[in-house]
Amino acid sequence: GDKKISLVPRLYVPELRVWPTLRDHPMRTRDPSKAQLFIVGYSPLLGQGGSPCNGESDSDWEKRVAAALEKSEWWQRHNGADHLVFWMRYNQIAESSLLRVLNQGALIATTDRYFWNVYRHLPKPFVRGTVVIMPYLDSSYIDVEGTDVSQPLAKNSSMRYFFRGMLKRRFGNRGTLTHMQPMLKGTNFVDKRIPYKATPELLKENAKEIFESELCFCPQGDAPTSGRVFEAVAAGCVPLVISPRDLMPTNMPFPSLIRWDEIAFFTENFDSILKKEGGLEDFAKQLEAMPADRIKCMQQRARETYHERMSYFNNPMGVSEGMLFESWVMLQKRHLIDGPYREAQPYTEVAGERYGKRAKSRLR
View 1 (cartoon, rainbow, N blue to C red):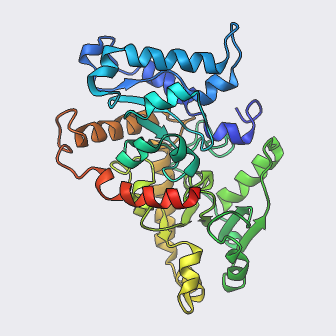
View 2 (tube, rainbow, N blue to C red; view 1 turned 90 degrees about the vertical axis):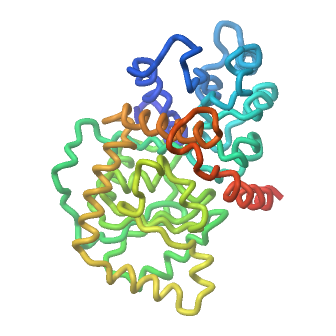
View 3 (cartoon, one colour; view 1 turned 135 degrees about the vertical axis):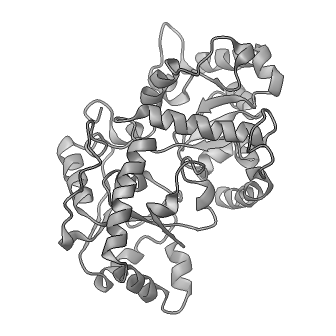
């Protein structure tokens, strides 16, 4: 897929791997009266990428999708609250009538809850908490088909800490990594933008270095998470997620199924660390003092978890099952179906309000 789809679009097209598993899923029913969840078989990103077709533009398609949903008795039953739509890319837009319909209450599958562009176009699902967080789709040089995760990886002790990316981003103060570098042993930090159309050679080189590294820095950028978190997990390089801690519990994929604290470290973003006297030095000392056996255990567990729930190339059914399970939990929290999560506190009561205020401040 890396040779046919350039880097940025590839991160956001899991439909190509997930939809076939849903089509053939053993729990699929063709009787809508028996369905608890409806998957909307239209993707704005894929639709706009394939337009025009048969004389129709993507805007024409989206008007038809919106009209079909509104006319459907199954959409009308709960005002779309039991319909799931893939909206994976952060800056995706759509025709106004489709946005209006989806804003009524649909479940949205996307990669990051805190992309302000998505929130701007679909504010109501985000405030209500009807968002299913999905893993990014990694390069096939990292999510290698046929991977045997039972075999331990050989790590390069001279490349203990890894970061590859732009040090200047809108948020997160990534440039702090240059100040940390002298405090750490075995750093491999490179300020480098991965081009939109990355060559296979560049992707292979990047994958090789991630696989050899022990701890991968994943600082906040335009959003709290990024594709590098999932590249790190796939490669058994323990992610150091440096983002606002209060946002992360609701911003990682499949929290009902994945124990993220077992496979990644979470800390405040650099802005918060730098506000504390000696904060950066203390952070570096903590990293250097991490027991080797704990890191090794987390590396192995990370690879196993990735294969179980986040690998689009090796186990797309595992990704689909995670998405369906989280949707099932949300439907219970909204009291649309019965189950053990029915009385759980809805996301919107706490984090939704906090995020809504934060997103609005970013949009100003």
